Amino acid sequence: MSFRPRLADPSGKAAELYRELPNGRVQCTACARRCQIGEGQVGFCGVRGVVGGRLYLLVYGRVMAGHIDPIEKKPVVHYRPGSKIFSIATSGCSWACSYCQNSDISQLRKIEGIEAAPEELVDDALRYGCDGMAYTYNQPTIFMEYARDVGRVARSKGLFNIFVSNGYDTPETVAMMDDFLDCVTVDFKGSGETGFVRRYISIPDADPIFQSLLEIKRRAKVHIEITDLVIPRVGESLDAAEKLCRFVYDNLGPDTPVHFLRFHPDYKMMDLPWTPVETLERHVAIGRKAGLNYVYVGNVPGHPDESTYCPGCKAILVKRHGYEILGYNLDGKSRCASCGYQTPIVGPLSKSFAEDRFVSVIG
Ligand code: SF4
Image 1 (cartoon, protein in one colour):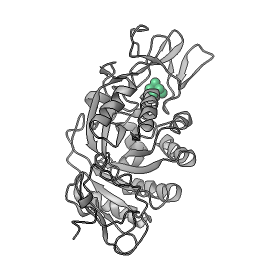
Image 2: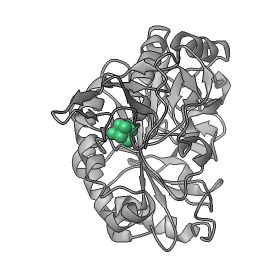
Image 3: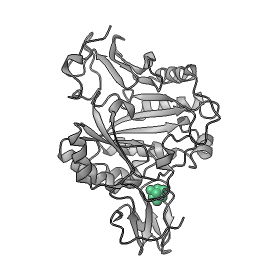
Image 4: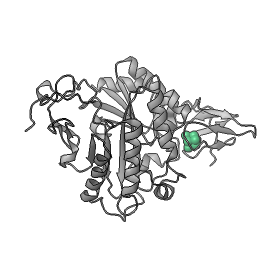
């Protein structure tokens, strides 16, 4: 894919995640595609291009979206529950998902957006009373150097940082997460089944995602949650879900939250129905059978499996409806208020939620 070089463009910045190849091309190392890019061309994501023999992050300092969200929307439910986060995205993506609900941003192969220096984004987040920053809507690792710079400023001002990621990373990218990232939710689709990801995502297989999770677990002190978008007819394999749950149990631990998300028709997949709730419940049962302690249904407001239950006494611990927390049954150290079981939920609870909602409306 070629583009018109814009060396004078103030929004571009030299990238750090790349290496020069003997054939005169440049290899980007920001995601597992490892594109080999020639002069005047951009990689698959459309936002990293070669100018004068160097790789540039062409969307550095340009955001396509900025929203205030509850952390539960990501979804993240075991890290600072109830937090308010400032979500940002650039254009472009390392994947080409046929069902993408953010395709207007992610599948845009243009350098667009409002100019915003890292300090300006963090100032905005603070002005709106946010507790953290989320890098989301498109794949954050394609704009890794920008995310890192925003994240460092955010952390210095007391904000936490979350990636909503497809996990299609490299060891080089994971190494860059060390000094700013606090939490990552890695989004599988169709449980990462090879036939599905080839046809509907345009990647050869999901192996780099599993490798990235191992690398994140090994080197980074990052809270990890897993989601899996279950797509009826084409991405609902129970065998693949079982394989994914076993991987999580064996490598990330039984306390890792796993969310099975409901698909709704979008973008190029308008011909499929919403995922039947019974299908999601079958996936949840697979996760529990694999030994996982916290398995959730997502995108079904009011479903009982949106809430958190105590592995010790089965009491409800966090009652949710959609993205809203209705009440807690936890003490200040994330222990079950009924039996004292120590949960892995990372506190403190956000100041965004009133103190009187703590241990209040369960029942
Ligand atoms: S980040 Fe973009 S340019 Fe780099 S390897 Fe991935 S798709 Fe290719």
